[in-house]
Image (cartoon, rainbow, N blue to C red; front, side):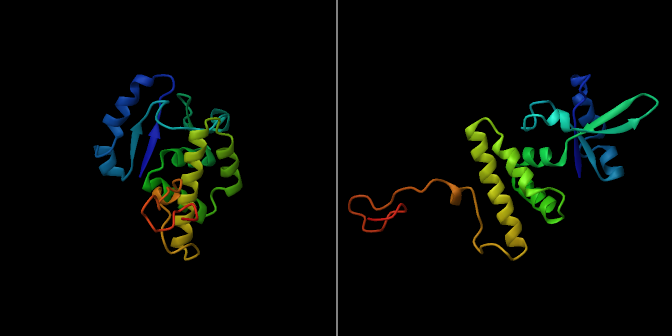
Length: 168
């Protein structure tokens, strides 16, 4: 298990996080989880995410407070990344009812960039379809990126097969 950390007041210290508590460090080997130093460009997040962060008091004496992503904003960033492990993570959030489908859909619809909105929608479809298949409720054939792409014409001159858009 890992947690991403961005030191807001000292961004240059991000590299120290990887070195001291990062993957395969002594900390990781001892505790079974690790920290990964990141930058603001690491994740794609929806508008207003900063206002929705959840403060977590780390050290009251020194006033250290971590600001954790709100769970729907985290799911949005996972959809934007679109890796296999992200689809599984989102599936688990849904399975255990930790996120609300409607709220995710509303966040997706707020994406200003049409290409990003399309990617989020496609990845949401993949993640939810994977969960439905795991639970025995979805189609037997997997939903993949290629199965969600725009249909291409077949059936050109000399090709008697029907094209994917209907007709010959």
